[in-house]
Amino acid sequence: MFWKQSNKAVYRKSNSIKDTPFQPNKVATNYTKRLLTSMDA
Image (cartoon, rainbow, N blue to C red; front, side, top):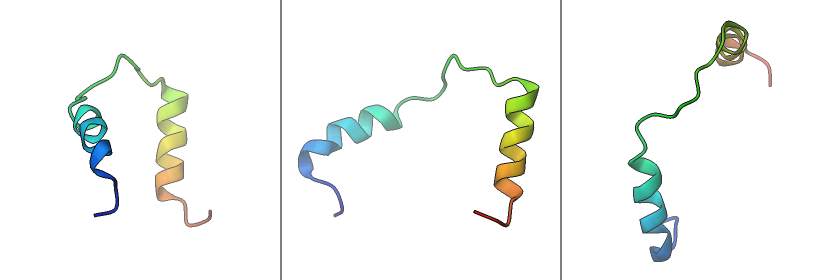
């Protein structure tokens, strides 16, 4: 395993989050699409 046993509770908690109150605007959405399709670092 790559994480310590004490981190399992933190992992489970973070994995249980299904949504957030963040609502991306159009600029953020377009920027994300550009990042995900970029061939450069």
